[in-house]
Length: 334
Image (cartoon, rainbow, N blue to C red; front, side):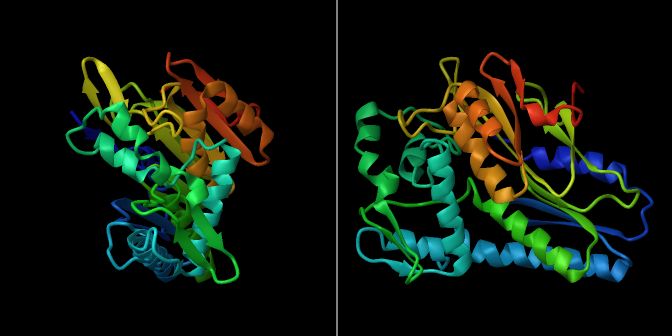
């Protein structure tokens, strides 16, 4: 059995838009981009500005999708993957930047975040029928998932995958990056506040017209879609959640989800969900996955050590851990 739940952003938008009914210059649109439904909301001095900001945000996400999507054969990442083991590929500033940040998050999370895990993820086929691969087959993939075989050249702005069969996928960080850039162009276009939500990766800027902060609902990892674990206030921040309830299959009573531990090449077992709040979407997006792999103890220690980063971790038993900086901002319960 497989299941995909793109509900994190929906929980947020329901709360946010419910507080904005009747606002004269608020415009919201949704569109299918980057493999998910994207919701963009803008507040402007007049409706024309808000409309223009929403369009600019969606256009920016579409532009980045054409660079970063591995489902588009002409994208820069697809070209990099096709050239694995043969040659380096020169890429745009945006692609190079998201790859650089991916390596930085990998280092912060002690290898828990790894954009080269694609071959192992494919072996599990979690998004399809789901299968438990043989351990020897997984071990044979290790040279292809080693991040040290991803080489970035700042001078030529080129990317080289040193091993044949390697492939990189920024799905675990690219949506947060896209949300950041979309919010930036929306603000430049004239929006005074807004929300960019790509599934569970959300970036906010400004405040609602009544000067209130945005309110975001965190999906409960073991309850039905739309039932929240708690609510949090956001202002000029991003939030992202990784959970074992998003893509998984069950075999012999065991849940096998899509977040693999690069050390074992099996689903990470320490957490049910990890929510990260940060100034930038790219950081929140990458950290939630890496911290999920690290587990609740090491993960919360990392959160507490990073400036402008907060988090909520639900461990495998359902115990909720909240970082110290969220006191007064997070209300647990439905």
